[in-house]
Image (cartoon, rainbow, N blue to C red; front, side):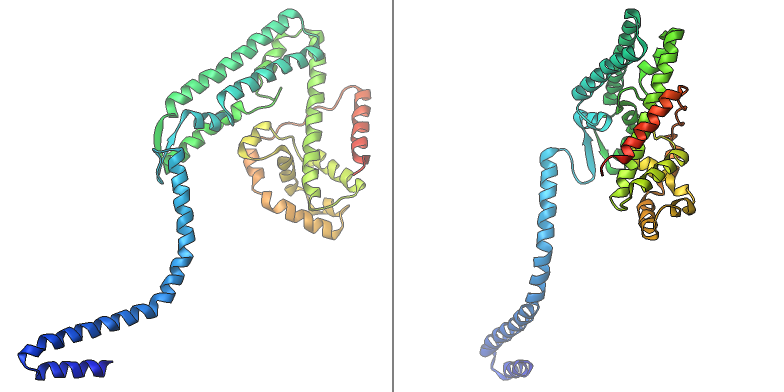
Length: 335
């Protein structure tokens, strides 16, 4: 091809002036053909690369389009925090559903406390007023948060900071019935008479022991997904939980740590010899693999004060016997 071009160029210089234009056009056509041949030689590789990138580009375009449809004012670097989204972040639900949930909890709490302590009509009314105050606090805090954060556009860094600032409110409002954050439980001791106080203390300790037992059972259930245990081994593992771990606050859920996982995390500090005393070597190796991903949680639980004190032992010997019998029945139940 190159020789052919040289011949054409030589001919162009030898030709009279009238034919030089024709020769020049031939040379241009030949150079264009060479460029086309080189492009065709590279075409398969470029097509292959385009074929690999096309699906990824299509997915990104679909995601971006979906985001724009959900929030037309949002682009890849900015986020508009709507009032509805703020409610979900704080209450893990709509505000209306959160309000109904708290209202139902308050009614249930008053009924449980009345059954345990034998409240008078005046005491029940005082608890209802406290419950109404708790619901009003829910509304007041929401109003402040909406005015402070909602309806604004944030960049990626700032929206992360906002989410961190909202976490204390998440822990405050995402609770279960009669947990330590209940205003009714905080008010009740000042309302009770002496005869009622003893009943309330016994009832409260019983609830704490029952919650402790549920947390331990949840932790053992997590362990048995990877380490099958005999009934005897479950009993010995339960004893380790009771002697070496503390109950976990319900507020740990806001840190994405379940109560069972919180109890399981605390076993990392137990000496290996105490496990090896009743577990076979393969079981102990598998149990260490269960512990490994969660070792960092213990420091978080301590730093956030999410570990509760152990409930007092029952003062009534008959109650202690009943508790021991209940644990035995749970351990001997069919697996």
